[in-house]
Each structure stands twice: as C-alpha cells, then as structure tokens.
View (cartoon, rainbow, N blue to C red):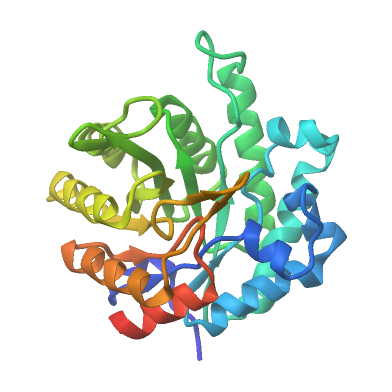
Length: 296
C-alpha cells in the first residue's frame, strides 16, 4: 500500500492521532523523573513500544516523543546541545513503527517561559530553538507537525514561523484550556475565537485544543466554540482532550474516566465537526482504541 500525502488523507474522513505519552512511557518501563525526550536515544525500544500500542489501537498517526525537545527546555537537563540529534532520533523511531501506511507528526511543545517583556525569552532565540527542532524532525522523516499545549499566541506564531522556515508540511496547532466562567480560555486568556482570528490565516492545516482542566462536557462545549469560529476558514478542527478532569489521591492526579465514557464524549466532539481526534493526559491505548471503534 502506498501512503497518500497527509493533506490528501485529511480530506478522506476522521483522522486519529494517539494519546498520552509520558504516563505510557513510565508504564513501559521508563524511569520516572527522567528527561522523556532523551529516551529516544537512551531507551529507544521503550519509546517504540508506546508508539506500537497506539498504532495497534487504530490510530492513523503517532506523535513523536519530542514535547520538550527544544534547546530551551533541554537546557534544564543538560542536553541543549543534543536537540537536533534527539529530534532526528525521535522521528526515525516513530517512522520505523508507523511504516509507510501510517503517519508521523513531529511534536513541538512550549518553551516553558514567556517572550520578552513578560518573560525572559528573546524571540530570535525562541525561533532558532523551534527551527532547530523542526529541522531535526524533518530530517527524521515526519509527515507534518503538531504545535501543542500552547497558551500564548505570540509563542504559537513564532513556532509556526519557525516550522514554515524549514518546510511546507502540514501544521496542526493545539492550545490548552481551563474553565473561565461560562467559557474556556488558555492561561494567557486566549479564547477560541481569538485563536482562530489570529492563527487561521497563517497557513496552518488544523487548529484546536488539548490538555487543560476541563471536564468532558467542557471539552464538548469548547469543540462547539471552535467549530463555530472555524467556519469558512478552511482550517480543520483538532481535539485531543484529557480523560476528563483529574482527581487528587494523596499527592497524585488520577484520571478515572473509562475508555467507554471517553469514547462517547469524543464521538460527540466528532459530531460537532472535529476532523482530527486523539487524547492527552490520562488517556491510554485503551481509550483511543475504544474511540476508534465507536467512531469508525
């Protein structure tokens, strides 16, 4: 089977991506508290195991294990000089499991600080870090990129510019939302309408949400807000909700939503108009498999 281009595949119906990575790495044997991104070099078989479980669950794509693999984040672990190497390794690992029939999205997460003057990060440094990451992921063979768990529009814009300076592959963008009265906003106050207004004209392929602290009804309502805002933009709606809102057990956040209940909510989100579906914190291959089964 010859894989069609990602942009063409997205026109053929619901596109499933994977779920949580960090918790699944620990479940697969990775030591807690390590640099997850360096596992692509240090424990590649563990990373491949997680990718394989999601592919077995029926996803169309896996997302590289590179959420924090930009030099600004890696510096906290002493690996800033290995950013390119880590991203190449991660993309090659994901590609080796996905093969030619499924897709690989290169994951770009936030830098962990804010741009000047609110924070300490200079725009030129942030763009360079994201561009280096994108080059590594491209070298490793990704089909597209997902810029995820973002809260600030200026950081997202820099990330988009960085990827587009390297290639013209599809870009998915995802923001993290919290309850804010009767609606939802990111930590930096960004509403779905504001995100669409600023980001939809920038040449991206999909836009939506992941992570945050909403319950499943909140994610369904967030999807409705995005669907309304995205009308006539040509940009697809992406939804990767958490497995509901976590509950504290001692000092641990525990997600208790069952795969069946998760799948039911994701089906509602699909019916609202989401074209790209997956999961974030608290989800597992079992949650994704149940959703694929229910929706397909």
